[in-house]
Image (cartoon, rainbow, N blue to C red; front, side):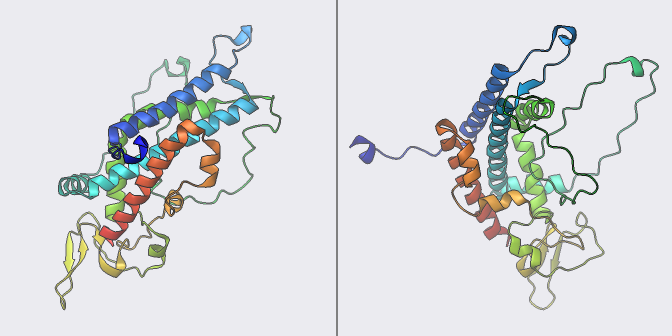
Length: 288
């Protein structure tokens, strides 16, 4: 009876969500440590990357769940940024920042060819600003063999796992970048916006601040995002609709995500997915 009459607990904040995502990463790292096979004695000094296929498949599921929760968290933070005046000013300042200079090339070193070459860890991308182009040529081979106890190489999964802590620590920076993409019109928030009429303008989205309709006096372009019926269409480029947003059309996570999660991870995924769905709906209403 106490559970029925007790007041509802306060909804978890960003700090609690970040800790939950760290817990998902910790479980994936523990799974890796428990099932990683050591190298043979002749290659013992090289990195260990071998694991049975059945455990590698579990590791991939753990990493996918952590990345899914992190993307939901980043979208929630982006919605909070665009929902406040100070946050919106921060995003507009990010859009108005000067262009980066191309990186300088390092001077040639005679010892470069003798230095150890390690594979790049890569960087985490919340939502790609470019539409994925179809691959041409031969299809890449499957990363895993279809035998459960076959030893497979997990170096790619290990690189994905290693970049998660940096992505969690820099979630606010990712949210600012995502909010800038949404505000500038590089991303649209619904599939209907892709079929909406587009306008072309010779001005850049960085230089164009606001345009008023001479007849009605209403602002049809604010910042670098077009308001009204042409929402989401800027300049002459075609915006991108991230496929991840399709997963947020319903308040409950997709079945394939929930099937891979156990009881301890489902509550985190449901809470983050619901908050991300709510943020996406609020953003679509405010920016439309």
